[in-house]
Length: 230
Image (cartoon, rainbow, N blue to C red; front, side, top):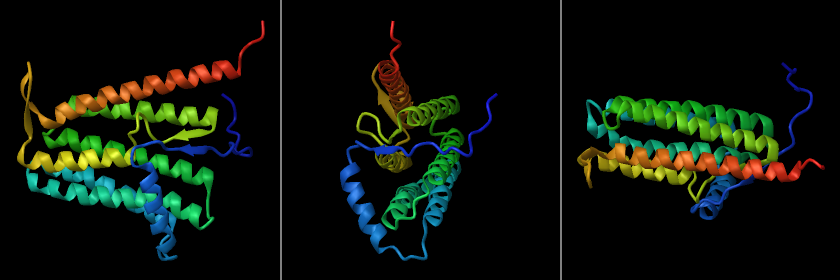
């Protein structure tokens, strides 16, 4: 096992976000960051993002007994967006960037938040527990591939197929509201099915495709760059 090269920080990576809402979102975030009180720093926003996502997971879990708790999910996701999306923007606008610290902490927080979300769904009764766990595994695998690709290409891709974290929050928020009054839907050839099971299967397929496409793309890129002369 090689020693951790703590004395040699990795090269800075470029952020690449081609999601549907990326351009408009960037303008909004910069506008907010320039007007945010100096007393509120990036770490405060990261903490807000984490706590609100833990709240989303708790709300889904509590909805098994009290479905009306789901009305809190869009509010908590908005707070999560505010904290998670704004922390890095504030650091860049104020020229207070800590690239390694920010990258590491943000993604540790993402892992914890994703675990809370899917655990909450597994306990909610709105999704089959095994499907929720399969989604968590697929999500973590996709994240791991992104981290590895960022390390070797120095490009951090925030979206796949035009779909990024903000779009995902919107889908979850809409789904949570729909779940209050209509937890099941009719699926051709299958019959009455849990709404979030249908969404979960679609999300699972999307995550697997995103993993596969990115893994192949990065492998081909590296193979071309490191071609062996014969």
